[in-house]
Image 1 (tube, rainbow, N blue to C red):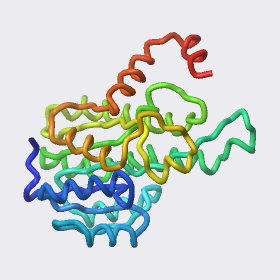
Image 2: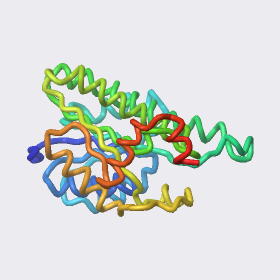
Image 3: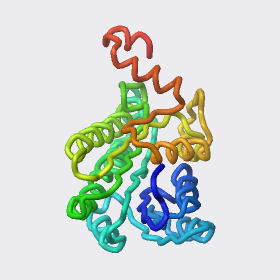
Length: 247
C-alpha cells in the first residue's frame, strides 16, 4: 500500500471523467492534489468538493511554456499522473469527409506529445531527489491497429512505449513508473464517438481500478480484465488474420 499522507500529486487531465474521480480518491487518501486541465472553472468546482488540500493550475498540455510554468509552480511533487487525452474516430477511407488533419494533430499532440512535455518537466527534479512516482494513462487501443483509431491508437501506443522505456531506465533510481490501459469507459468523450463500447465501465469504476494499481508495485494494468487479455493476445496473431478479424 502506497503512503499518501503528506504527499503531493499532480494530476494532469483532472477536469472531468476518470481524472475527476481519481482526484477524489487521492484526496480522500490524504494527499494534496494539484489539478490541471484546460478548463479552469471545472477545476475550481472540483477543488471545492475535495476533502483534502488541493491547488488549481490550469494549462494546455500542447503549450510547452505553460507546462514548464505549471511544473515550476507545482514544485517538488511526489507523483505525477498524466491522463489528458482526446479521442475522435476518423476513417481515412472517407477522404476529407472522414479524416480531419486538425483533429489528428490535436490527438497526437495531446495524448502523446503532451505527456512528453509533462514528463520532461518533472523528471529532472525527481532524479535529483532519487524519488518519485509517474503514472501514464494509455489505452487498450494502443496494442493493435483498429479501424477509426489510427491516430488515437498510435498516440496511446506511444505512451505505452514511453512508460516501458522510462521504467527500464529508472528502475534503480527510486522513481516508480506505472502505466494503465483502460478499455471502454463511459465518459462524455467516449459517448461522443458513438461507439458501442462493450464491457464498458463507469468513470468511477475506472478510477478505482487506477487507484488500486497505484497502490501496488506492478508496472502495467489493463481493464476490464477479459478485454485486456483478449487485446494483448491479439498482438500474436499474424497480420492477415488480424485484418480479417477486424474487417
